[in-house]
Length: 315
Ligand SMILES: [Ca+2]
Image 1: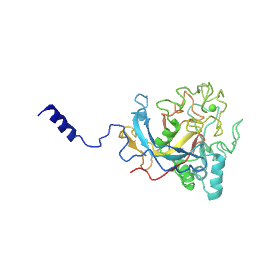
Image 2: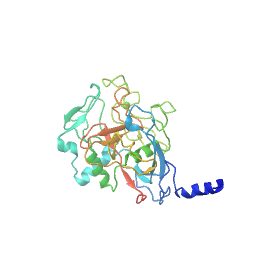
Image 3: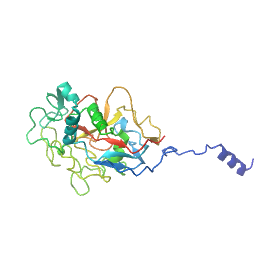
Image 4: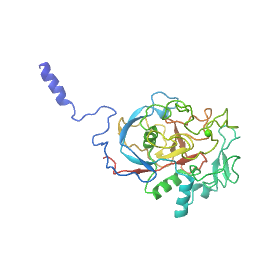
């Protein structure tokens, strides 16, 4: 066989439409109808991004892999105390913490990793009957003391849903890749200001207050990311739709479309870190770390934002 004939034979044997690893599936479209974003939400364009990383002390962040997403809408801020209060008023909803009769509370002065089961701690009073000195909950604070179930119920009432873990990270990265924060590797932005609310100080006995907030910060206290989302990291952990499994990334095919890890029971994923995260006790403030929480557990450093589909998902 001549070399030319051999090449022709090899080409004929290659599957047509074969795609390189990490490409998005056939049928995936980066265009979607120009539907206007609902009030308080922003449209996230369809696209592909890198999730996870090759080297990390935590296996659950590996490997780095390409993820493809259809367009979706996402709240530009965390769900506020005010918005959650309106939902409760409208529906009479009772949260998990209210049914349990307690919530999990942390505050300045406590030991590292300590949490207190606190009677009466609810979304209305996230520290229980007595708030710590210097803290008064505001309508524009992110709502906390909400369980995964509460977050799902709230988003459903607005015709939405929780974002998937992949949607959350794609939107919070806003086009940046492979950095811990949307603006780079340091918690300080290029202008020298802290870009997020987390814990500063040698331990949890006393915060140094360098970022201006010991506890919750108003949802627009820090500048938004490049796509207009406030609190892309810090302030409160953000509940997402996925069940937590350590091998989620390892099991994904390159170029997976709209991934969502489902399953019965187990922990749910929370991302972004919170005001209680210090460099010493919790490295979770950032865009790689995969936090987790029991779906029925209410904490005073966990909140959420809602997503909504733009159109039917790609096939
Ligand atoms: Ca802080």
